[in-house]
Length: 427
Image 1 (cartoon, rainbow, N blue to C red):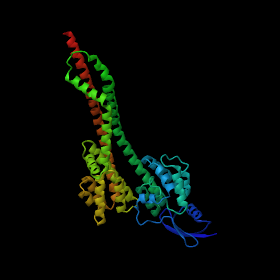
Image 2 (image 1 turned 180 degrees about the vertical axis):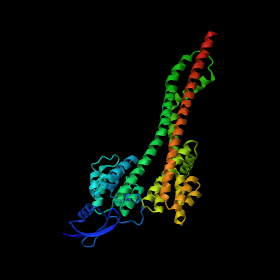
Image 3 (image 1 turned 45 degrees about the vertical axis):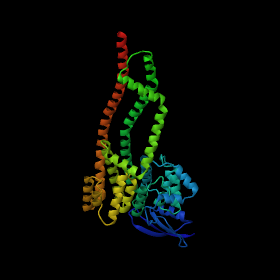
Image 4 (image 1 turned 30 degrees about the horizontal axis):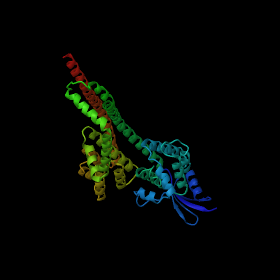
């Protein structure tokens, strides 16, 4: 029976070596995991090495390039999968951490994941991860072959957990990280649902009234030589436009949406719109708090789990959805490369608030930047909850006032016409 020499880590991080008499490399990996170890490298009897957790020279290799070298069938299957939601990713991560914490070897845990219900993460993903690990790849390298499911942030944190021997702890932190982001995202979305529904219903009612109800009502005035009030004449004109040129209105709206989308896709358009979002009244504060909290939470989580600062900044930059913040983080990363601290370039960007800069500087002075970033994230997440409640308190009366003005104008137009007819008949 062939022999396989191996190098592995204990849960404490200690590196151990040994030799196994097994049939093949897959059996060697299973045996290593049964010993409660995390495999690092397995060498065959003829000296052929199969690096299980071989570190890459560039942890931020382009996932697009990786997808390009995959077989066409695998690439097509990958493209059919949708990107999981944050809550779905949190559930998957927590389930995997629970299985590993119970003492299951990694391959056995991944096999169990194919039977656990994890919405958003197809069972064949866990099955493919298990196959890749059995073939000698590390979990992070196996996840790197699924770029639609696992982001650079996820992969780098798993790699850091593998190298430190604290994979379970890292997975639990990631599950908590995604859970927090899912909660913030849900609160942000719920704050926008009410005004969108009210505005949509209002538009539908107005369109129906203008095109269906009002023409029937105005037929009463036909044949009557009665001067109509200005408000009524204005309403009739608007109704005629809606009734006769509704298709022009619809095409115009579609054309505006297409032009807006094209403008948004350009670099200048994206930067202008994102800057307007940050400076918008009322909503601008909500956007800023959400983005600052997201940046602090992401960067702090990465640094706490041993990801190098430059890699952590690059991943945090990719996570950001706002171009203005992306550019500020990219400039910060360039200056950190020159040996400067994080706080100094953050302050020079004039994008991040002074509170964040001061707390990061305190963290650098005390040697606990991840702790300071976590405090920043908690602070902004708390302020975000308050800001969302304020926005909701402002939106509800604003929607009521707008709807009241619209209905009031309709009633004024109709009733004033009725009064004009009645007074004319009385004469």
